Length: 348
Image 1 (cartoon, rainbow, N blue to C red):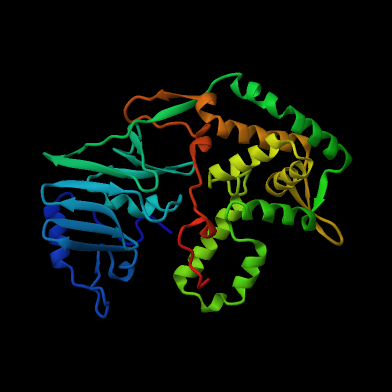
Image 2: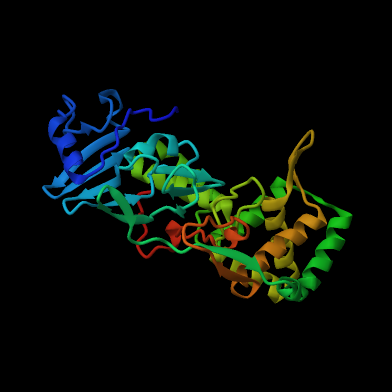
């Protein structure tokens, strides 16, 4: 997508937004009477609506991005689609010249001007409130930014508790560092099923009637499948942005702590599934796992479970951009598996 694909024009006040709404004819034949915010051919991407006489919504793909109110206050919300390509198409939703959105290493920011000297993180679900006074925009709820600094030596001390497992894993991996998928998939399946996720057998049974499911049910299916494959946390380029699944991390810790040889084998299979390198022989798909990768996996697990001890927060000046370093340890995967919910939809 290019810059401002929908040809959106900046609306600098509630009066201007209401005037645009009132002068714009709805799209002919559209059951929702959608009014385009920019070019009419892009009304699905950019539209304008008035839920009441005192509110104007500037929508990006049918989700409110900017809300104007009759007292000339407005709010900016995180966009529906959260990718590096979005800022180019939503910057002109902001009222004043030089205000813009900025994407930096997986994060969306609101910028007061093109110099980016004052920026504010806009995570999913976030909202920034503004007041227009004499043609200037004032941010009313500026979020506080922090850098996350590691406390030296804490994680190394905590890792000592896992030395027996790591020593055992090093011996096993010295003998064989390659695991067939037919061997590790059942171990991983047993692990995620214990967390409430749908097992492979249940998925296969479900796939036979997939065509009969509603769009909502199919989306729920894929959401759970995606979350399931990311448990207990993203590694490297694989599911790196999904965060850590708290219950999955605690389950692995408990399996290691109990010292049961069978559970240790299962833990090693889970590590191989998530952190192993994919290989292929003439007959089977495999995962190759090196001892240093297993050690790093356990280190990340321990760091996450003890993050309050391992890190400290350093408050930044107003408008400063925080570093992404160590931020992943404070990103939780909060998905609840269908089998763990109080009400189970028996239709799928």
